Image (tube, rainbow, N blue to C red):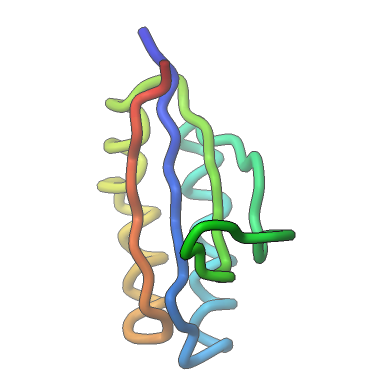
Length: 96
C-alpha cells in the first residue's frame, strides 16, 4: 500500500483568530488519524509561476487513512472553527 500526502495551500487568511482555532483542533485530529506533519509554512523559494503561499504537507500510511481523517468528526469540527477565515485548497495525493 502506498503512502498518501495531504497538501494544503492557503491562498489567503482573512481571520487569523479563526485560523488559530482551526489549528488547535486540526493538529490533534490529524495526528489521531495517523497523519505526520512533514512541512508547513511559506516556501523558502518559488519557481516557474509559483506563488509564495502558506503550504502544509502531511504524510499518511494510505489514501484511505487520509480520507478518513479528513471526514472524521474531529477534523470536521476544526473546519467548522475555520469557517470563512481562510481561502485554501486541500489535495490528497497517492505516493509512488
